[in-house]
Image 1 (cartoon, rainbow, N blue to C red):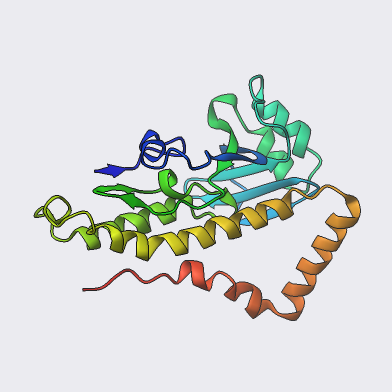
Image 2: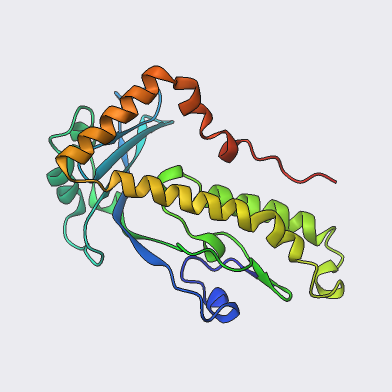
Length: 240
């Protein structure tokens, strides 16, 4: 059986009843689609004091935007486009213009939880966990869905050709799945959470130090900064 039942997975709770539940990461996230005929070029992300705003141009003169703020969990309700304009309306262009075009039905708001302590395994017996059920993470590396896809590829490889290896191969069949996935996903969860903590900085001195160090890194060692994602993005699928 495969438990791909999300961040609050009942399957995970059943397999590992003593493991800590997902915890609030300290940020709330908004995601929205807006018409953006004037937005072209590459995606970008801007950081402020405890806040982030990102823009990704899409086809059809549309932009996908996302935003986070360091606020207590449990908020929401009301006019979310108005809330975004209050939080980001004085940021650089084209953020105010994009938010002016936002409508309530195209804005999602969610408190961001993550599974901070890694599970002892991604399977138990003949049951495997996949995606957020196994390793829910913050969105700071954009790897939540990506890691779920990797899980699926590895799980299919371990199970075999679909002739029933999981059910007739004994309880150790899925050990290869845990061996291939647990360490990698745990590193990515921790790395994403570390970036999340940096984005939550609000103290003016800490924010200035963060921004200065980031700018210097891009100027003095751009290849090293770009190469920091090689481990994440350069994953090779298993081969026969």
